Image (cartoon, rainbow, N blue to C red; front, side, top):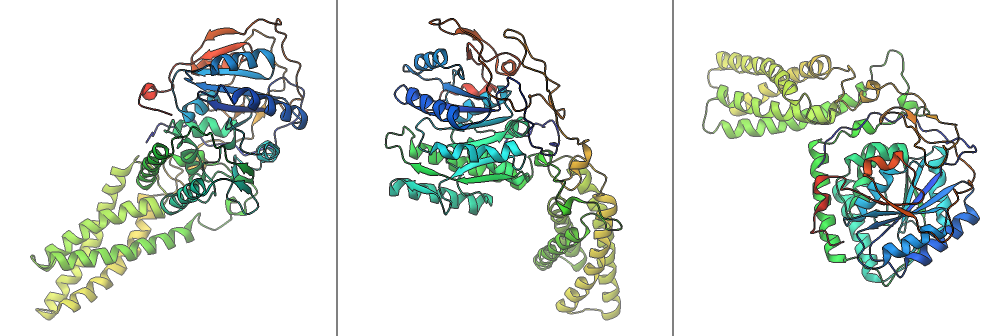
Length: 510
């Protein structure tokens, strides 16, 4: 699981302003692999629908990931015939790879994708992207499992889809209803921060993106869709299911160990009363007390179990010291993650060292209690020892919470803490470049990656496309994926280098 850092906390969501600039508001990506038969009618139908119903400028991007049939030629002809269509060529397979590469290079504020078979009714497209344009949501997905959805498909695919979503709910605590529907959209500012954390390059890409977004507290909007199964689908069900289960295990392990910096995806929800600072109320105290009590109760049971085991072959003092040491390490790790919301491995050694100091204080209390009991009673019963240890541990627990809160995990706005991470980055409302699109052939300028200035223009009406000589095919230019956002997409079939070194894996058969 990737742990590279992202540029910082997201700014507050705002409605994208309307204006008269040439940048497309919506970029709809159609990932294809050997789709020479369906590509032309799909793009024609989608273009006609957007022209008739979508009120702003748009673009349709064909993301051809290593097709070996005539799909590249079909895509090139469509690009030459339709001004709003561009062709994006990758030399490696993988739907997730294609989406991440094209989305990362696009300058449109709203990024979407749909499957080439158009199984989803296109009337759901505007309701899909509207919450993203308005600033209400961060991501949007079509759902075939919503109560009001109308779906036509065979029992085999119905069973597989519902079983997979049940697995996600049981293993990753996912609350979204349909991870696999090929009908999704995301805001570009969210994609810039979220996509570097998504590792999968195949069909599990959607699920991983949604799970990480949900765990980070981003808002996911679901749209009920009308969906008709494509009987000619080329998806390999067995291999896809196997890879998806491997992805579930990998993501679940990363979330359990806290190795993902999801706190950097935090977005300030200014209208949420839970985010308002209240005078004379310590931040998060009630939640921390509940979490600490739960962890403390479980730690006490774990400690007593260890003490009873160690007492079988050692004296009371040695058994107490060993049991307290092991349980203290577990207690510090649990409180670090669950009570005080510290994510990642940064500062873990220091926190454990400070926890051992707190452990030493607890050891002094419990050992002193045992020593006093032995001095008073000679040979006390085992039940008496346990009762004294429980009382001593209760006193040590109160002291441990105070030390944890004031010394080990103070609320200082450290980068690793989930409760204070939002305060580590200055947050301001995004600004928009209101200048018009530069002339064809020039390179627009963008602010540095990670700043709060969003490098896309206001919502425009449909622009007049750049003229292109009739009958001439588009020029073919080689550019790197990282440079694509700085150049014009018009009149170019872009051949990309791998996004990551391992993206050239020849074993990906999808």
